[in-house]
Length: 342
Image (tube, rainbow, N blue to C red; front, side, top):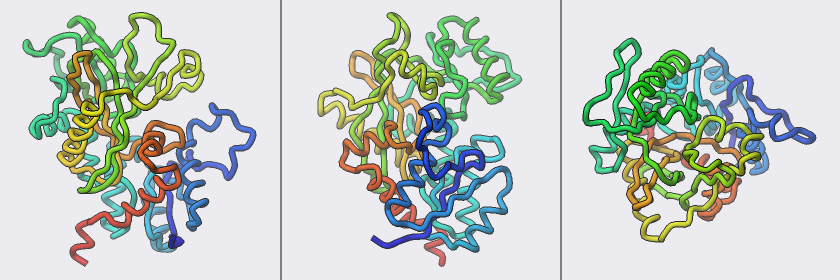
């Protein structure tokens, strides 16, 4: 395998130490992904130079000029405090004619807007929940044909920001209260979508036009109190102590083979409809009757070792280092426009 110069792009406060010896799970949680990816790249024999970024783009330009990386390994999830600005950093890499890992800027733009992506997927024949967007500064009035209960969240934030059990609303009064919460506390427009009672799955996708899907992964909550909805709240996703307390884990889904194949086929259709590339995770909910709906697409999902994307990849035949190396290879092979014009 050829030794490459790789520039991992991380948030400046998430540049990991060289070792995690003696640190607890809680202490490494914030930068665990960065540590795992950078360690894997080093173990693969690549020359690795992590770059911590804040709100200044100039260090990236300097690093590309001086280090001349074969590929930038993009681990940013926001820029300048805005979740939707990381796509502009990727656009800047395109302008620099620089290879990078993960999703292209157009795919990121389409996927991050939950309302736009649902409209695109519905047009492409992919089942999505019915929904309505509530813009900031506008009166909260539910459409007559949009039935309760609804699930309310930010229209473009990720990582379950602003999501709790209160996100499920069963009355118009609860809807107005939760929409106002998203407007005021999260600071974005809100989307209210039909709440799908049932099981939650994650579909890992890898590739550009030719897409590989990994075995379906499912959210399991062993100690959830009776009657509590099984949803991925921010606490469920990121609170390590709470995860241990109520037995949260993600694992291989137990579904009939034909059902899993149908979901995988629809996942590939969704991936292509949104113009995604590199790798992504698609979130799915399925009712007890087997009807399933795609909730959203997450370009550049969490790559930490042991998290659902890496675990499902391993179940599909790629161990962690192989997964990281494949993502590097896809970054170098992405057919960017500048390559066609050079």
